Image 1 (cartoon, one colour):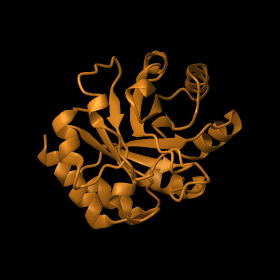
Image 2 (image 1 turned 60 degrees about the vertical axis):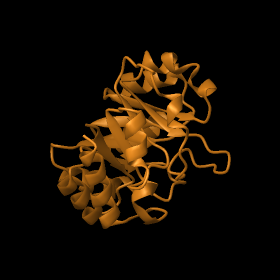
Image 3 (image 1 turned 180 degrees about the horizontal axis):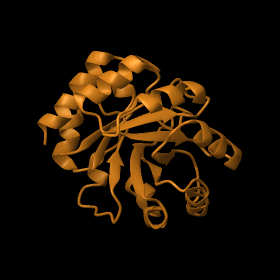
Length: 212
């Protein structure tokens, strides 16, 4: 059965709902242009309230060393997620700098977007496959999915997460094709951009569990 990551958590009620429903990964977004951005001081409080049963993930987009060091010095994090245009060598640098497991997000639109995934697989601890959108400048959380069949029959040496436009309505279809270690959702459990819906969080997690 796939675990669930709820990304873009910004308040205690959403955090508690996700944890009680069974989320094993909690994501805090430190990309200022995102509607899900959270101030590090606020993320610190939520991170400290997160039980050990869940992993706390900090999402960054093309971060500087200064940003990484500052935020990781404030917020207790278990993993770092890189969701920008970081090169494999940059992923390696960040991993050595922060000394935490690194997830590298790869944006997918066609099979050709997978051509260089091995270069990232060699340096990252996890891979995350998200949708590539021409209609949005946002690196993630666009609510759009990609053709899951692109990943069908692919094998990876590292654990991986599936993201991109997943909702209560379509996650069963995704899981009928793929078997990711983690299902990652953000916009699919929101009432509007950046605002989590408690019922959607519970229903989404329960739907993933029912497909175990």
